Image (tube, rainbow, N blue to C red):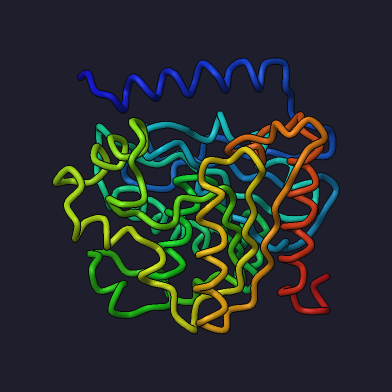
Length: 298
């Protein structure tokens, strides 16, 4: 199989290999790796990371990784996700089905399998299902954002063949360097639109893009949002529009714009475990999430 998506998968991977070379599991982390959560064993493994020397249930962060719908897996995102575990959360880091092998809504279907797994395995892994948070970066922000819409907008949920598990909800979501507005006029570059076209089953028709356009599906029942971008993020222009939609729906949110002394914070800077600014973003996001944890659980 050859495709533009597979070409970009290799290109993205080559860059991230350089970025992450030499990184190791930080001290203070307990890992449970390679757990199958769905029907596709190759595409459906997840890891659970917990801070070591903790007992009982912890609030949960589920990470929906980015990668332009064609790239990424739990191995690539392990260092990024373990940083959140160091803040006192149990973190779910999962791999999901990608284009060109699979098409929308494969990623959302897999996210739903993760939600089912969390609700069924809470006791075994010490997961506090009353305090579940979602994070996503880039295309993953679109994915976790849309799943939050499925949980809060019944007519949007009716478009899909799966049903979220009973009792599952997000207390808040973190949307980082995100792709929110999926539309023809929003992408005229030579990379993003071809990737969207590969992920959508009919190559990117207007109705398909409208279904993936998060701005169409935020209602007053949407969970609180932490949203962030950086100075060099090519998607930064979407953050003000996201903020306006959240304001119009009375959704509590916090929007952060990160800069660096040398002004080099690019797209998905938050995933670079070596960057001081990535750790600042994680600190701020976790502080926002803790606002939505019951006082007795803090």
